[in-house]
Amino acid sequence: MVVLNPNNWHWVDKNTLPWSKDYLNGKLTSLSTVSSDGKSKIELTQVSSITGDSNVSQRKGKPICYFDLQLSMNVKVTNLDTNKDDEDDDGILADGKLEIPEFMHDESDIPILSQGFDAFDGLVRSEFVPKVVETLLKYQDDLIKEHSKDIQV
Image (cartoon, rainbow, N blue to C red):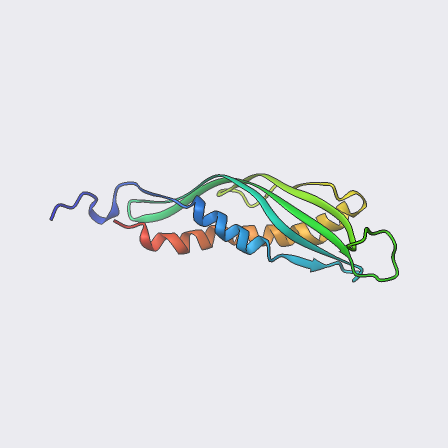
């Protein structure tokens, strides 16, 4: 038997973008919260786009990951207050997008841009965006845990 990579010393790469898309779609589309005043609900309805790179590698026997992703998400704010008339027929108060232009492996400060929320932008940023960030910060640990066991050759 010929050993081409003894003790996994040389680089071994695994493209994890397909897994990352499934993971982020599953984790993010289940996010919702009720505003602190109890008058509205904010929920992520769709991850409309995930692009970029995501890899788990092994070098000198140690698993490492690196990713640089761009995400676009649709979010809606719905009315829970039955006495308010600022809504359309479906109870939707605002329908907008959250954009993450750069979600990288070596940064915990994630820039998130919002558009289309009008008067509810502050509410989305203060009460919903932290939940998105909390979910995204779990991604790297889960990525390594899921893929480091099968990266060895």
